[in-house]
Image (cartoon, rainbow, N blue to C red; front, side, top):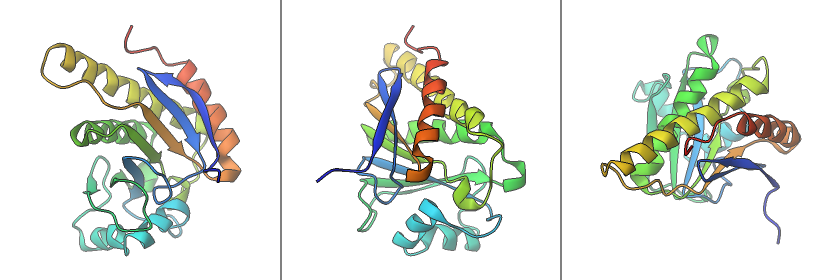
Length: 204
């Protein structure tokens, strides 16, 4: 039995970067991540809607209650996700107000994800930006892909420096998988491949 289609696009700080036809429900990783805006432009769809349903609508319910607003850099961590979720833990990161969205929001989300993975000792991550799921159509993939890869590189550099100083254990991360729909997989893989190629190795 074959798994979901995935494409290796390069390596950043010793971490294999892949793009795969998965979402935060179907990704078999240590930590699966999805983004959620403060509101939807139209209606929740795609992988984020799939995750919200699998979590019994807890993410959007908490947002409606004001417990988790979806503000940029906010997050909720679910340590014991129910079936059919295949990951060991779920992180929902806030993407802020859709009208104020910028690539740096995703860079910050990847940094938050990296820090959470360090705390959990996660070796593998699946990251679903969920931009389209919230009804937002970005101007292009290139800036978003570069922002996310840069966020990984910056976090890896900080983790490496802290480990060298004896203030933190080395990062356990070996695989970071970006989620994409099957129809968008090839285009996303090309964008991430260029982003990885254009990112200096933080180990150098």
